[in-house]
Image 1 (cartoon, each protein chain N blue to C red):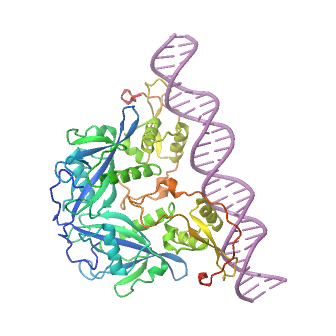
Image 2: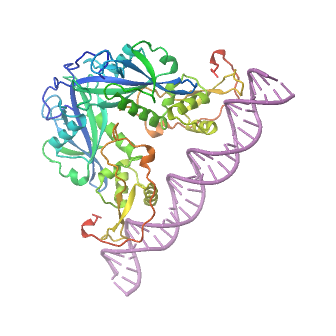
Length: 263
Length: 263
DNA sequence: TCTGTTCTGGTCGCAATGACTTTAACAAAC
DNA sequence: GTTTGTTAAAGTCATTGCGACCAGAACAGA
C-alpha cells in the first residue's frame, strides 16, 4: 500500500469501493430441523434490477471498513450481529457490468431472536443457504465461499456460541453444529468433547418441562469476545484451549420458568 | 456490494485503493540455519520518507487485485512468486496520515533461487522476519499477521512446497517446516507423517555425495496448483488427503551429478 | 577397516476419537 | 401409583494418530 512507485495521491482511479455482508442465522425449515439461512435484499435499480443481492453499500471516507459494514447492516436489515469478520476482497474487473467495483465482504452471525427483527417486506427476505436463486453480480460465489468458511471454522473455533444466547443446553449447542455441518453428531461423544475442551461450564441450572431427564444449562467460559479473528484480535492456539476446571457439586435444582425449551 | 441503498455510481469518494504484498523466502542466517526473510523497499517520499515499507502500488482500473499485486511485485522486485494469496484488506481511517487509503494485502512465497534475483540496491533490502525495524504505516502489524498466517497454514496445508524446487529430500522439506515453525522436528516422525499423508512420492533417485546414507528424492503428488486458496481455488478436506500409494520396488540408484545437496 | 553421520524403518505408550452400552430422571399415559 | 417413553448423562472398548525413542542401513572420509 502507498508504495514508492505510486503517485502522491491515489484517488480518482475510477474504482468504486463498497462493503457487503453475508449474514447467517439458524432457522427451522418446514420439517422443524434448524438450517442455515441468510437475508437478501432485492435490487431496485440497474444493473441486475429486481435480482436478489447481499446487503451492502459504499464506504464513506470517514468510516472504517468494518464500520461501513455495521452501518449498512443496520440501515438495510436493522441487524447488529454478535459476530462479524472480514471474508475476502472481491475485485475482478468484470464483476460489475458498468462501473469497476471492489467489494470488501464481511460475514456475520446473528442469534435467532435477532434474526426475527429483520424488517421483512417486499425488498428483504430470508433464503435457505443451500437453495439460493441466481443472485446479482458474483454474489453466489461469495455466499458459497462464506458458507465454506463458516463450516470450516465451526470445526476448530467456538463460533457456535454466536448462534446462541448466554445460556444453553448441550442439545441446543449440538443442534447448532449439526445444522451447520449438516451431519448428525453422537450426543455422548459431543458432550465429552465439549467438557474436555473447557470452553463451556455448567451454570447450575436445569431446564424442566420436557418429558425426559432435565438437561443442565451451560455458559461459555472466558472473556473472549466473539467479534473478530482478524489481524487485531488474534489468539494463539494455546490461549484457545483453556484448562478444564474441576467438577462442581451436585446441582441446586433451580427451575426458572422462563427457561423452558421449545421441545 | 453495489447495494440498493448505494448511489448509482460509487466513484470519487476520495478513498485511495492500493495493493501490497508480504513476500516470504527462506534464507540462511549467520549460523547457517534457514529462517524466514522478506524484502522491503525504502520510501522515497512523504509520508514516512526513508522508512522501510512493503512493496505495493495503486490498482489500475483495468487490472484485477491479484493482477495488480503481481505487476507491482515485478516492477519493484522482479519477483514472480510460486504462491500468492490474498491476506486481508486494511482500511482504518487513520492508517495513512494524509489521504484515506484502503490496501488489499497479499502474501507470497518464493523459492531461494528466485529470491536471489531481487535487485538489491539502496532501496530494496532483505530483512529477517523476526527482526524488523519500525516500518511505514501499519506495515509491522501486517507483517505480523502474514507471519501468523504462514505458520498456521504450514500446519495443515502443503504450502511448504512453494519454498522448494520440484525434487527435494525429506531433510530439505523438514528444514522448511523447522524454519517456519521455529522448532525442531523428529526426522523419523516427520517421515511417517509425510508418507501417510500421501502428498509426496519418491522419484526413484537418490542424492549421493554426503558422508552418510544417501537420501531419496521426492516430488509432490497430484496436480494441485499452489496459486491460491481463495474463493476460486478451494479444495475440500477430503480432496487434500490423497490415498497413499503402494510402495515401489528397490531404487534404481541413479545419481545425477547436478542434484548434490549443499551439505 | 574403522568411524562419524544421516537416512530409514520400527516399537512403545499416551491421548483423542468413534461406536456403543448403561443408568438417570423426568412427563405423560395407564 | 405404576408403567412407559424419551432424552440426559456417564461409562466402556477398540482404533487411530502422534511424540519419544531405538536400531539397523548406507554412504564418505580417515
